[in-house]
Image (cartoon, rainbow, N blue to C red; front, side):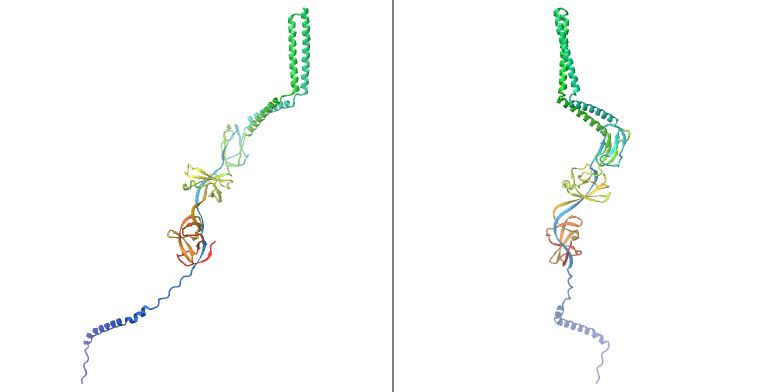
Length: 436
């Protein structure tokens, strides 16, 4: 029996694609039939393990407290002397000497200039002589009439009485002679006239004696005392005129200008020098227009000057000028410096920092508690171990502290002041201490 012959090589390639296609169909059908068997196993595979939660961040907090916001305003001004005076001559004369020059610091009683006092001394000598005469007359009146004067007046009276008696005797003899026809009537008339003259002389002598014995009247003594007082006042006036030739300072000051020279003749009220106070100065500061009418005396201002780097002084406002300055058009405040710090002179520039309380409800807290994100200020309040981000309004910036406000904030809340860098809303935190 003969074996079948093998297929030729040309026939095998024609059957291979069909075989492969059949195998693919069989595989697809098998996959569809077996899908329900392996699908639940894929869906029930366990999820990957979750990442561990971060630990709470340690923070320091401070309890929130209500306070008053302070607005700090920088004021600019200058120093002016509280006293500026022009020394004038109070009497006329020639300037003999100049004792003070511009820039000299003087004290009360310092001699500034000397005028010729010749005329004043002559007037003083005349007044002193008149006073001596008035005092002498007063002394005589107060002492009364001397015994020698009374004795002389008594003698004058006796003499007048004797002359009167002699005239009376002559009249009697004349009358007898007329009756006898020995003399004429004319002689009788002359005898009567002599008696009358003698009687008048005797009456005057009696009055003079009575006046001497009675002494001066109280009215005469009082009038003479008034004359003495007037003479004494004239002496004082003359002494004052002499003293006024020596022109002196009345207070501590600095000589600003000298207005006369040696040899000048000055009249009364002529200017001699100008002085400014060196230890009593005023600082005038200009207020911003929005503060006009809101600043009161007594409010403190911290002063500083570029010319005195180490000088800082807080002083109360002495006065508020109720009108705008003509140059700056701003209202001025005045602060008295008495005494002024050494080295501070009139005309120097001065700066002042004025803190004004704001009439707005606010919470005062450390500046470290603030966080700025996208032009909005935040603080983090801690409650139940979590940080809650709270937006706030910045009421006032006071340097190391700030005044903030949000109606949701309450006094006593714990606010993060340290450890809040990069903190997010709702983050877990752990309070490790309270900031001072």
